[in-house]
Image (cartoon, rainbow, N blue to C red; front, side, top):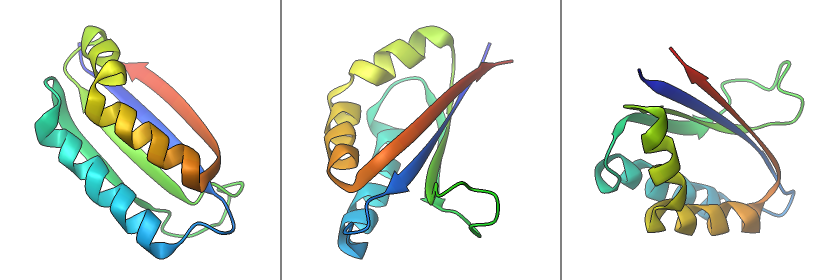
Length: 98
């Protein structure tokens, strides 16, 4: 059964556009790098209405819940995690299986 992971990011005030663009570029690479990734979309919020300050997000679809665990420990994801830590003040992740 597919798993959907939604991650929202609240950027630090000093996060640069270059950092954001590199993050988006590297996140998109994970589509090809990590087995079990069916789709991955990433980008800024269309508008800030009702976002509670979360200004970027990722929607990821994986083949199964087991692939979620593999995704989390994959070196490409770990690299992205450190990029996120450098430019985000907060994040929120939510997983759904259906």
